[in-house]
Amino acid sequence: MKINKFSFEDKSREWKLESAVFNRLTLLVGASGVGKTQILRAINHLTRIAEGNSINGICWDVDFTTSDKNIYSWRGEFEKKEVNPFFDDEDEESVKNKPKIIFEEITLNGKPLASRKEEKIFFEGKETVKLAKEKSLVNLLIEEDPINIVNKEVKRIRMNDHSDSQKEPFRINLFDSTKLAKKYNTLQKIQESDLDIGIKIYLVYKNDKKTFSKIKERFIDIFPQIEDIKIAPVDLKDEAAPPFLKDHPFIQIKEKGVDKWVEQGRISSGMFRSLFHISELYLSPEGTVFLIDEFENSLGINCIDELTNDIINSKRDLQFILTSHHPYIINNINFNNWKLVTRNAGVVKTHDAIEFNLGKSKHDAFMQLIQLEEYQTGSEAI
Image (cartoon, rainbow, N blue to C red; front, side, top):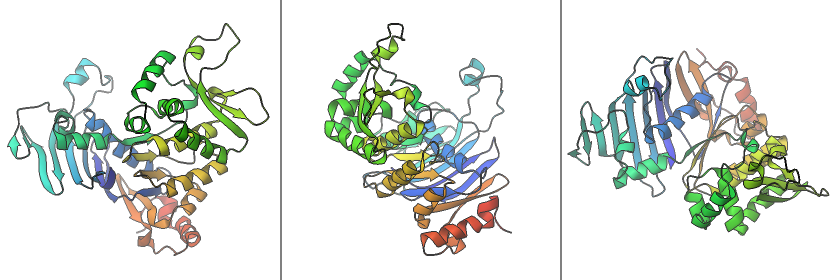
């Protein structure tokens, strides 16, 4: 999918995003605390709603284009309820008190597809039986082909955060990984699966040497001190070592001139995150929407340069919505893809660079951007 336009309101937190338009690559820029991260979280709520979650007091309105060029509109609203902070989502009291959807509408190419208002639900012009009030139609009508497409597309939204991933195995043992390798034995099957990116890397390592070689070669381009990568259990001589280290595959890298492999937990966070970002460009399904907050986190300047270029030059059907404060990232992404985020009280807006008459060259645009009062303070000039 490609998100074309999105607006959102969280009435329980008195926070509102006015309608924002997104490109294939959108970079959200602006002062700290202005709402850039909140925009990504709001978009990510769409996946939670599609999975059947009830979210207190929110309204959403999204237009998106699917891979087959159909245009969907999906909007709705959950009621606002007073939430008891002493109950979590699984407590009996919370389950009984889940917010209900008070309005919902889905259109396909401008024509009504499904709607809900008060007690009535309509699908393709016909009233349906009564369905759960706490769940979206995108979840409840998933067996219907047009709605199934919406559900599938929305679930391709990915909120990226690999900051702690190198500390974990792939959450599968060798027996399960062998079964997965038999099931997902082609690149297309691996791409279309909902598996974690770490498991996808393992599967492509086992089943598609050509694609894995491309990932490895790109990684070595960025880190020329590395000569090889493998995904396998750690070779331990110590009998007292935790058993799971011998039963689970881990990413390991080999440095030039060093015999001992560097196991996953000792790979630098910048290297590890870079490997995951590179792999996602190859192993995610077409139509994936990546939400990446503070893209520069944990990355050295060599990683930032190369990974930004990979995103800019990607030929696959992927969408990227990023936030960043880093001068190189901002300066290297064309200013036509910038969205300057401002905030007045609880209302957040996004602005195109053209609104501020930024210069024609990237350098001029960047220098003008950082001098804007709206960029420095996060508030719109009065």
